[in-house]
Length: 60
Length: 150
Image 1 (cartoon, each protein chain N blue to C red):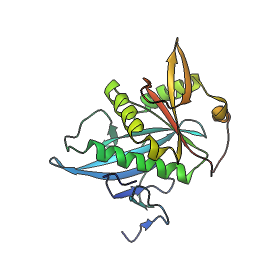
Image 2: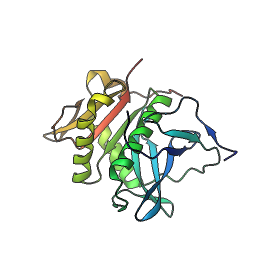
Image 3: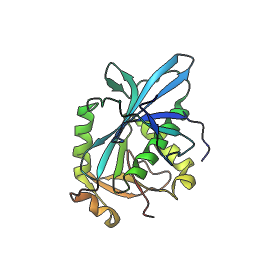
């Protein structure tokens, strides 16, 4: 656990979320479902409050 | 909120992958939650048992902990949207019963969720798909949440 650190203030629902820098990212799982989801969201008509989701952005 | 859930969750540094263990009569089962980028602002939620490098999101693990897992996944959504308030999370049930489960869970806990997240359902009308603020008892099959602005 020495490589892992608890996220400050990250308890939501009482869960202790611990960042694990050693975690190796898995491949994108169920790519066929992800493709269907992408197709789906491209068809969604968003209400005015969510129209920004149609626009590309960088929020990092 | 004080729901029964798994208390320790590991998360990758980019917050796109969460892992925990389901514990019950069938033993310890590794669970994984992924937030998969679809656009820079919209992420797809996938979760299930972690088996040989892939998720099985249709299997009932028989650990009799469905609600506990669901609460843990919901907590991960809270965590992800707290880390990235500008990102929304899309999710759809992989089966009709899953869709119904999500609708019921959101409806039952809406008062607790609403102060933190805006919740939308996608309504299908004549081959059109319209997102609208979540209404209880509407037959949504897709859902979308985002962190409320502070």
